[in-house]
Amino acid sequence: MSTKDIFTERERGLEEEYFMRKERELIEKLHGKLADEKQRNQMEEATGIHDQEVIEALQELGYTPETVQLLHLVPLIQVAWASGDVSSEERELIMQLAYTRGVQPESKAQTQLNDWLTNQPPAGFFENTLRAIRIFIAALPASQRRDARQDLLSFCAKIAEASGGILGFGSVSNAERKALEQITREIAKDRAEAVEQVLAE
Image 1: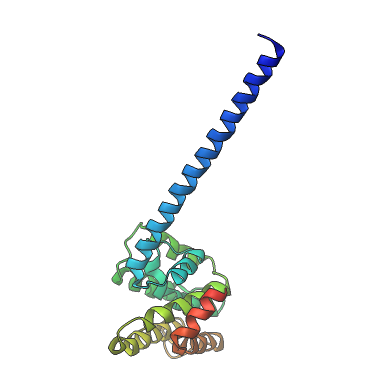
Image 2 (image 1 turned 45 degrees about the vertical axis):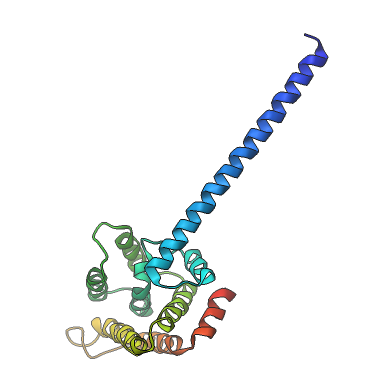
């Protein structure tokens, strides 16, 4: 075989390798796109939110179909962390509520919840989650919205009271009070403003 043939063969081999690599990349992208779409559909089912941009914003915050059920527990976690650490009483109350809401022991949701109770999430995570909750509540039938807000704020207040005063009752710290006020303000805003804020992040 001549030198020219050797180079021609080598060139052809490199071209084939290049196109095969590109084909693999395209297949991987397609699989990734299908997986993302499936996950978005699962998130929509789990939350009842059908705004694709909001679902994507939730995914960017780290929520998955397995952990999105924790969405309404995040304000409680925010209140628990307001004083600088999560007390054992606060942790126990949050875990009890999680179990009544269907979080299974040893599940991904429980693992994620334990992580949030051990390692304080950043302020931006709490803020954006509150906006998502507001959108979720706004999507409920009018007859259910007020009760949903009241339930959430009531549970937040219980967390704030859990580790204060005598036997854990009767005292809410200034930091916890500020967290409760922020959550109340955020939940009270209208849906259009909430969507705008989530998408602006």
